[in-house]
Length: 328
Image (tube, rainbow, N blue to C red; front, side, top):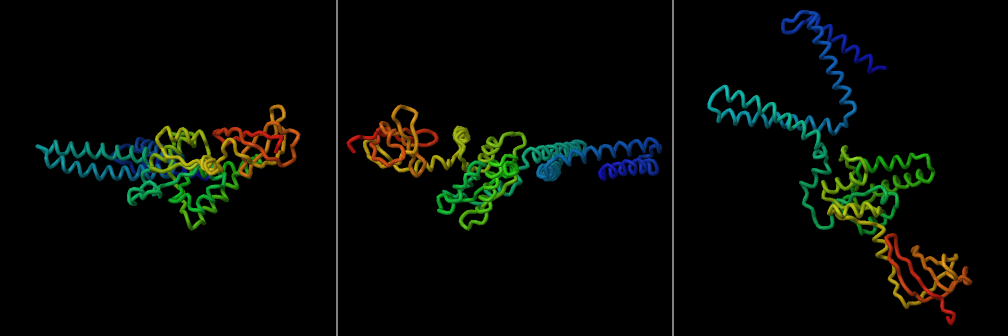
């Protein structure tokens, strides 16, 4: 309500100013119409600015000012080599029109160039192993990133984009209890990382309004910052690698660190449930690996020795197949 009253006041004052102080020798009524038109234009611009992110406004202002400076400089150079005063004046006007326009467009479209996280990489030499690590929502909620950082397996600045932080906040505010718990866990993980003395966390405002989904935004951000994406998402990992980016997948690291089991080896397992096939039992190792044992259904609820027959590697982990020998 207050903004409407303020806008109405602007219209009345601009119209009155045109009527009582007519510019350019206009008649009072025509001057009042001009004042009303200018007030409407100002209100239109105000409504557009209110819906525009600050970084785009700031980028357009910097771009326009840079364009004015470049236009003036090019105009001076053009005027100095021009053959006549009319040509020199024309060149100055053209440069002062074109360069601010180009600067405005560049500042609006490429406002992320002014982001400190983006500029920082131009002033600091990048050393091996200390590039930007860009975190996505899944790896933050998972929580294992804190252990990797605390043990020194991941170093370098950790970058958390504002759009990932927003998505994490939406999950934390979800009506679903499980999602809300996962979102709050993710916020706690970020708080732990920010307090860490081993790694530094950068919250970047760099965004890509023309890109809708978060995964595509992460890929564009990694390309701009020449960074590495840290994620648990298999699909994001595949797409990012197809785009030529480096990806650290926590699940792949966990699978790589699981003990190697070869066919023919013996191992001791505790059977907890029946398998899908006849006379099968199922056990799980401490790291969560599923073990399917043939000829063992009657031993469910007991610990037995088995012989490994094969190991199947899947995208979500390993599956071990074994056989219970009666003579053991």
